Amino acid sequence: MLALIYSDRYINRMNTDPTKKLSGKSALVTASSRGIGRAIALRLAADGARVAVNYHRDDRAAQDVVGAITAAGGQAIAVQGDVGVQADVERLFKEAVAAFGSLDILVNNAGLGAHGPIAEIDTALLDRVVDVNVKGTFYALQQAARLLNDGGRIVNISTGYTRSAFPGFGVYTATKAAVEHLGLALSKELGARRITVNSVLPGLVDTDQTAPIRDQFAAVAAMTPLGRVGEPEDIADIVAFLATDDARWVTGQRIAAAGGLA
Image (cartoon, rainbow, N blue to C red; front, side, top):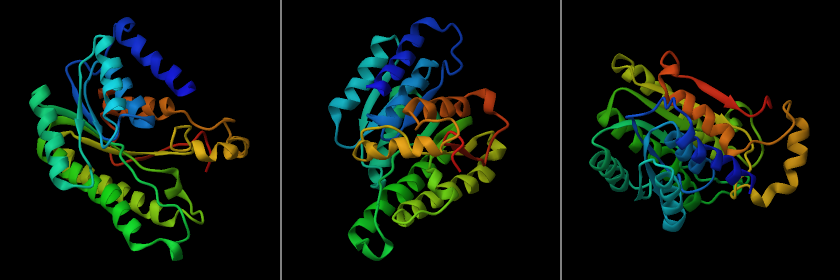
């Protein structure tokens, strides 16, 4: 509920904020029907961007995001697609460009968890996580490198787990480490076109995906210098900064967003 209240702040801002730093820009946010992705889509729209809201299965949730944006005077479309399938990713970009004329911002938010000891992760799960987290990011980065306007912005959502090591998170973290390195490499390749590429590394964030471990939130908050777990909007605000011209001199970076928790 708290996440929805924060997101409503962005919806209201679409009508009240006279300075919209992303006016005239268009964005594609993968997996943006819920959680962190939803908050990012709403925040970018609040700053004036036209947003392609990607979803895999939950059409209703995606339409809710689109409806919230359009009701507040913004422009958005919902685009179904599995980022782990190359043809779907190519279609996502094609539909976004067809709707908006061009594309300026890509946020690679889609990610699939794989929690468990390395010795117990079966091949089918490993393949699916690699398909979504690594291949899916690669497919999207490849399309962005080809289609994004010069001066564009790419933001990859990784995880704070890549800054340390925890039992049971080895496979998931390895795929996200690959995401970060793909972003770093692409930042060197696209620099001449003034396209920035950065990764945001969230800590524990309160979403429906983390709901099963809410009993652990208090312990994590106690270890966090800022005294709480994250909200989706904490991540969305950082992404929004990286998407604007204010972040024109920031590229190839891994930005931790975990309230000071190492």
